[in-house]
Length: 101
Image (tube, rainbow, N blue to C red; front, side):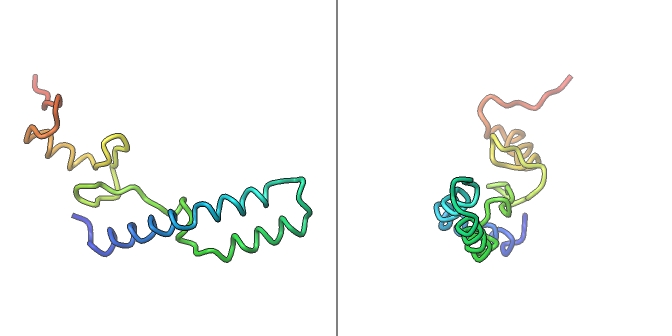
């Protein structure tokens, strides 16, 4: 099980990303548009830099929904390999059986 503080920190980052997503997209569009003047593009970049760092989506890290583990994460199932194996062994995932030969 991951530390509760790390899970809380990741949740806080996710909240910031959701809060600033529209503002970030708007400023990025202004900065990337060549039809705008150089001053406007520069001002947009400065405003973008003043936003909180944790509001950037690249600072998010996928974590297991069951244990909070940050490594060995399966996107489709939103859980780590260890949690997946435990649930599969208990028969709690439909259609998944442990192989044996």
